[in-house]
Length: 461
Ligand code: TRP
Image (cartoon, rainbow, N blue to C red):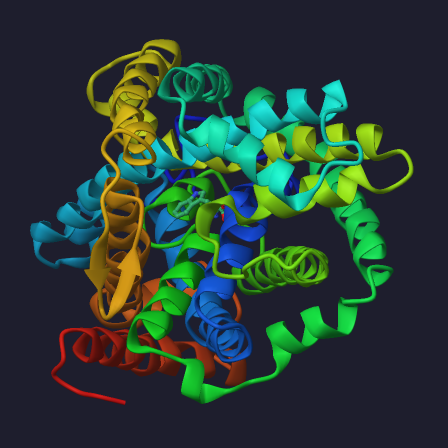
């Protein structure tokens, strides 16, 4: 193929910075601020955090490079990219299934992601109304209970968030996605620092740090290792084609390796700061670190309710959290939308509306799983309390994303010709390239494989 024909019909990022912002916008979201703290709390802290960090460095960054390189080589929606590269590289057409699996995972993830983002929208209004001022931990707990116990209210917030997401996706790559991230991400970062400052003065900062960073392997269960690995994929948006489709809009002369490292570092920094801000508040108020998906909604309002300017900071914080979720959500349906535009001859508006409506419907299941349909079940020796929401989360982050990421590593490491990979990465064939190649060919498959074998009980550690 010639250079000229390797252009995406959907447009291109205006610059390397624009891509970094968009990919970071996809990576940084509820996963960092909502999910990372609550799963760290549920899985005992330090040892879990260490496994998570190792997974980011050893699996996440190399898989991200693979995913971007596949996307940029194919220059189409993930489904068509897989089809075209399979033909170009002379390997089985079956690989197109990887593109389809990603589309399905995107629908499933966004269906519950949007419900949680809806909680954040609701909290914007609560923060602005001043109800957090001077409130106790019990009061905040009751407010959260009111929200999750009320399906109609959640449906309203979920609808608002899905409409927002569909609108941006409908507008397309440049005008829609780029504009949103440029100012909002730095704003979120600043507010996290404000929260961190508050937590440092609670008198429990050290206890928070201790919980997050002192490693005690006896607290690490099989399920925790799988969750840590799954979260590394989730938080970096890997394994379902979101980063692949963003890569397909990337100009040919941007360094994939450097960009991946920058995105992973920013993402990790945000998650760690969120954790360091939240756990001191948990301990200062005698809350339970393992209290599940409601954790940030039961801790952060306490901070805002007791700091000077809390109404303003609280409102701003939840606004920015909604934006962070928004810039992530759009990447979850972009692969499906790009495919509809390419293969069904739809314009972006119709494609985005269709995909948005399907996701909206699916989201209703998650809403009901917190109230009318709630049930408990055991997963790898742990009790989960929110029925279908937990099942969706485990199925997508802990199973589909690691398998998808594994398949992408195998695709780049074993299926594509080495010359194609070298040509696309543009980093020569020096030490760094060799290290990456060994990792995607051997380390990633073995690591993901061991974690799964451990889960199904074939090996035990
Ligand atoms: N990474 C985002 C977060 O941490 C969520 C997300 C966006 C995502 N796109 C994705 C997760 C693709 C998995 C796959 O909030």
